[in-house]
Length: 589
Image (cartoon, rainbow, N blue to C red; front, side):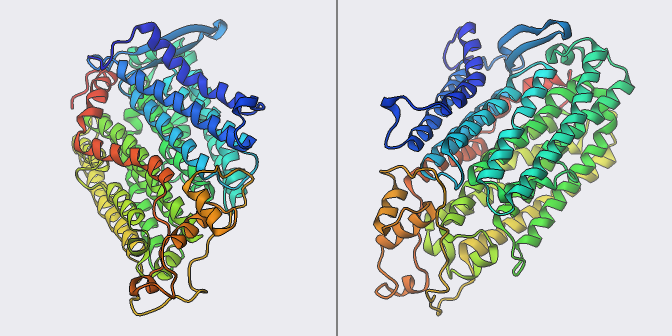
């Protein structure tokens, strides 16, 4: 069954277009804009170019998904297979199935939303041309990772995203951005070198780098010792990118320093590349090796779940001076621990849970980083003590819609039933209760109990964050002096603030060309009475600008999909389950 009937050749073209178009768009972004497309200034033109290219890729991805044969999600579709390096039998082999299609669409969606958000709120940094080009190269590498079916091409695509993300952090990031960028690139490059050795070992010992042929063989052409070595080498590289405890320490620094859209893409897309590699390569190609390391992978996963939650609790406590972006980054360590636990069970139930949790994490954590970026823009800081202590009734009283959205994202992240975060964690724990044959049931049931305890810790720190940021430290009889009011961070970016937007109109009303943060304050001030003339509520809780139209446009799809996936999980599980069943060669659910 397909939503629309599309010929195989058109499907092939769509998949190739999705992978190649962002690269071509990146090259075009660096060229001078044609006279008719320059807009008010070159910066505005290149930002519009980024929105156009990522929008075209998203449309192509949606059409590709509509033409996907949902009756045969385990079959590779829209395949292209062209010889590239005959001497090594390396081929340009592209294709999608029920495992890769959701990740492909998620990547296209998040990148488009980031480009749209950046059009109105460009982060402070160098030329907008370079920013747009780097985002497009990042998108191309990520999409290629989920579409290629050759081990060496997978490695090239896997590495292609590192340099763009490095520069996005190093040139457009915040405090400590240089150190965070270097830490990110060193960790991931060292992991990739080890991963390449494992990929070469599999290709040379099996005689092919074709991932479909290797998965069909299911490890029969590789000895157990080769599989063990390959899983150890490839798994280390993938674990760094995931990130798995204790190889996670680059992640909080990178998230804290990255600009808002960099954090969204890092959490929503790049982390998924590591877990996708476990499912696409290690589970079907080296099952004996995976069975050897599965208990250790599960143990590291549950330690990561508990560690990430405890780190978040430490950051959330009063007086800890915890950064809200850093807290969300540590929460990703815990959430990706559930994904790794599901993969380690080697069962259809657990792997389906891992794939569902992958998508849910991309939607929810992407939304969280958007919201935290908006809060930081308005207050000039992401420090939890400042957000909770200096604002009285905080977001519920000052920007109610923004506060409500932050509360929604937080409860979705803690796994509230009816939202996307619930199903992945539940299926993962069910998979751990009854792991694959040959794995220790007592050990995995212990891991399940620890993981379930981690869900309680997750609920604890997320509810603390909502109480402190959305409700604040109540001081109903106090009155904020001008010195106590939150300060706004002025914009220092060279990029343009396009005219005709809410942010730019607010900036004009304030009489200065400011960032979305300053624009937000001006907008709120222009539309409400001053502190001296306002009623009692305004005197204690001065208003901030609530959600701007461009913010609503960027966040609404993530909210809608989080609800849809929570209420109708069969949409996603119907795609992944048959593909996972075939991938595991008839494993029992």
